[in-house]
Length: 131
Image 1 (cartoon, rainbow, N blue to C red):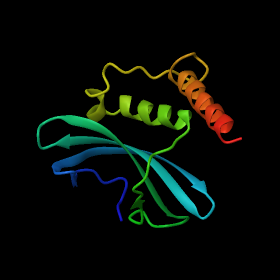
Image 2 (image 1 turned 90 degrees about the vertical axis):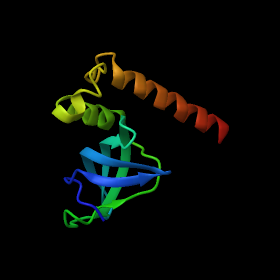
Image 3 (image 1 turned 120 degrees about the horizontal axis):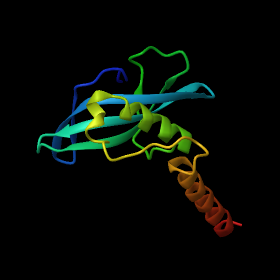
Image 4 (image 1 turned 30 degrees about the vertical axis):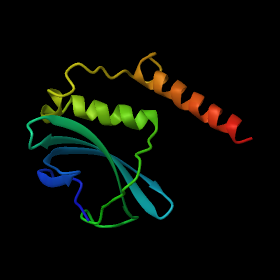
């Protein structure tokens, strides 16, 4: 179990050692659980930084250290992705990594609309294949 507000957590991934420098998250409730989609700033021992999306859950009303990392793909609404990127752009530790990324507001013709269109197209393609 993990406390989402904690940073500087050492991790090992496929033979690489690194540290979570900073973690931002957006949480929502579904049924009996609270789900958090996170954006983590990783620094690997080889000296490079990377963004990592993770997915955590805890029982509704669980303590701050009751979050469990889910070994699964991270699914999120485009608005959630934009919110995480907006938080990161305003965070001093992420700023360097994201200096060339622009985050548009919903409806402005930017990131959200493009992502929504791609998601809609994928959903329609899936529905056609599974009819």
